[in-house]
Amino acid sequence: MIYDVIIIGGGVIGCCIARTLSKYDLKICLLEKEAELASGTTKGNSGVVHAGYAAPREYIKRNLCIRGNKLYTQAAEELNFPFQRIGSFVVALEDSQIKVLEEQRRQGIQDGIPGLEVILDKEKIKYMEPNINDEVVGVLHAPTAGIVSPYEMTFALADNAATNGVKFLLNQKVRRIKHQDYTFTIKTKTQEFKSRNVINAAGLYAARISKLVGLDYFEIMPRRGEYILFDRNALHLNKILFPTPTKVSKGILVCPTLHENTFVGPNAQNITDKKDISTTEAGLKEILEAGRKLVPNLPVRSSIRNFAGLRAVPDTYDFIIDNTDIYGFINIAGILSPGLTSCFAIAEKVVEFLELLGVELKIKEDYNPRRLKPERFKDFSKEELDQKIKEDPSWGRIICRCETIPEKEIINAIHAPVGATTVDGIKFRCRPGMGRCQGGFCRPRVIEILSRELNIPYEEVTKRGEDTNFLIAKTKDLTLKEIEGGTE
Ligand SMILES: Cc1cc2nc3c(=O)[nH]c(=O)nc-3n(C[C@H](O)[C@H](O)[C@H](O)COP(=O)(O)OP(=O)(O)OC[C@H]3O[C@@H](n4cnc5c(N)ncnc54)[C@H](O)[C@@H]3O)c2cc1C
Image 1 (cartoon, rainbow, N blue to C red):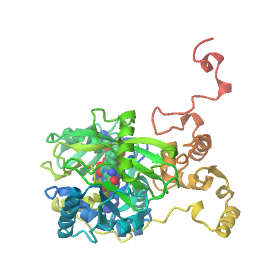
Image 2 (image 1 turned 135 degrees about the vertical axis):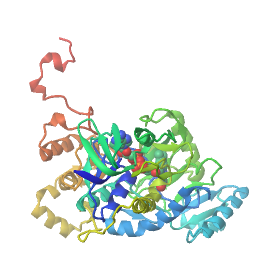
Image 3 (image 1 turned 45 degrees about the horizontal axis):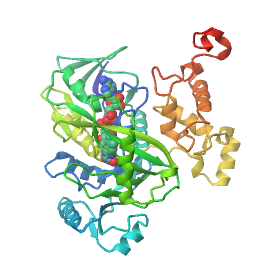
Image 4 (image 1 turned 90 degrees about the vertical axis):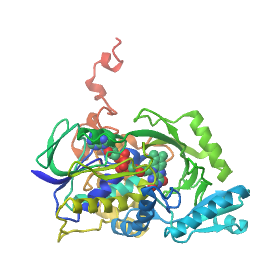
C-alpha cells in the first residue's frame, strides 16, 4: 500500500499535523521511534501557550505563535484537553525596564494580540498576583496567555487522529529514505513503508532526517532547560510570571500547572548530547535564584522533582517550515519555543503546502473533530462515583494514592485509541507516579496492570520502551548465582 502522507515524529507537532490532516480523505501514517508519543521535547517544556509578543518581528515564529494562540480555544473545546487562559505578567523590577514592556505592548497590539496592557499600579498588580515580589514596579499583562499539559494535549490529538483513521506506529525509527518516481520508500529496522508525501517533524533529529533525502541545509543543536517542580498546593499562583526579557532570552519563569503544582525554570545551556536531560547543581541554583526575584517565597522545601527538556535549536534560530525542492518532502524543523503554542498554525501551513503539491484535500464525510474527555475519578460527585464503582469495581481500587488514580483510569489509558504500553506512558496519560512519592508506592501495581491488560509477562513491562525493563525474572525461577549477580 502507498500512503498519501507519512509523518515522521510523534511529538506535539507531528500529532497536531496528523490530527489536522485526519479530516481529509487521505491515507496517513505517523512513525515514531520511541515506544510512546510525546517522548521528546514535548515531554519537557513549560506548557505555556504564549500570547505572542516575545519573538522578534522578522521571525516567522512570531506570527505562527499569535495565530496558534487563537486556535487553542476551538481545539481545546473539540478535543477536551485541559487548557486555561490564566494570563501572564512580564515583570519589571526596575523603572528602566518599563520601556521594554511598553514596546512589547505597542508592537503586540499592532500585530493583533488582544488585551495587552502595562499595569503600573502596584496595588492592582498585588491583587492580581499576591505572590509577586514587593519590589515590582510594573507588569505587561497578556490575558490571552495560557497553560496546557503538553503531553495530555498530544495524546488527545493522536487519539482523535487515530479515531479518524490515521495509523500510529511506535518503535519505528526511520533509518533510510529513498525517493524515486514521486514515491518515498522509508525504511525502519523492521519494516518498509511507501508514501507520496513525507513530513519531517523529527524534533532534535530533523536535520538527520532531512539529510536522508539529500537536503543538507540546516543543523539542529540541543539547548537544555532545567526545572524544579513543587508539590501540589505548596504555592498557588494566579499568573504566569516572566522576568523582563533580555536580547537573548525570555528568561526563567515561575508558573502554575493545570494540576495545581508550581514550577520554576528553564535556564538555557547549549550542550552537544541530544539525550542529556540530566539536571545539574549549578543549573538548579541558577533557576532558584532567578525565580526568587519574581516570587521570593518559592516553596523550596516542597520541591518534588527536578527535570530538564531539550530545545531543538536550528542554526537560523527561527522555525524551518519548508515545502522543499524534493517534491513531496516537507521540513517542519527547528521548532523551538513557542512551538507548542504555534502547533495549530504550523499544521495549517502543512495543509497549504499539500494543496500546492496538488494533493486532493476532500473532507471526509464521517470526520469527527471531537474527542470525549477521559473520565476522571476526581471529576465525579460522590453519587456518580458510587454508581461507577457499582458498575465496575476497578473505579474504587486506588492505585496512586498521591494523585488519587483508580485502576479504571489506568485500564482506560491502556485501551485508548493510541494506548499506553509502558509505565511512563501511563504516568503521562493519567498521572500515577506524578505525585509526592513519585511512583514509590504505585509502580509495582502499574506494572501488574500493564502486564495483565497487554497480556505480556511482568519482565517485558518497561519504563519507556527497549532496554528499560524493571524486572528481569521471577525470583523463584533464578538460581542463587543469578540473584547474587554472579557471585556464589
Ligand atoms: C525547556 C523548554 C521549554 C519550552 N517551553 C515552551 C512553552 O512554554 N511554550 C511553547 O509554546 N513552546 C515551548 N517549548 C517548545 C516546545 O516544547 C517545542 O516547540 C515542541 O515540543 C516541539 O515539538 P516537536 O514535535 O517538534 O518535537 P518532539 O517533541 O521532540 O518530537 C519529535 C519526535 O520525533 C521522534 N523522532 C526523532 N527521530 C526519529 C526517527 N528517526 N524516526 C521516527 N521518529 C523520530 C522523536 O522521538 C520525537 O518523539 C519549550 C521547549 C523546551 C525544551
